[in-house]
Amino acid sequence: MIISLKPSYREHTWHEITGYGMFDNHDPMGDTLYGADISTHPKFQGQGIGTMLYMARKKLVIKLNLKRMVVGGRLYNYYEQVHKMTPQVYATITSGVSYVNELALIIIRGVDIVSRV
Image (cartoon, rainbow, N blue to C red; front, side, top):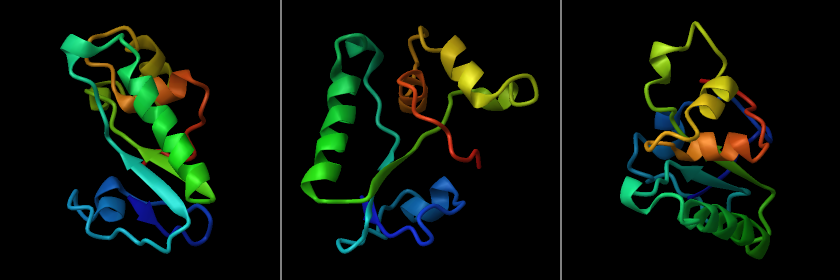
């Protein structure tokens, strides 16, 4: 989904940015590729599928001459640990678990979390 982020980064919620999951706020004239929650079925994890999807996003940003890619994702069951550790630590700890998610994979690749909403 392409969106316009003005200013260049602003606080937002997943519901707000995705139109409550309907993705009806796509803006073909926008400046930002927004990636929301992709995952690989546990049966197919560890085969590089998630990495290929992430790399395809990066190529799309370049091809469409967008300014940035913003990724939104949710950490499975993080709410149970929110007062005990940061999202980065939680993602690292859960990275080997079968329900590893997009946000955990991206954090492990060294991408910083700008905000936790």
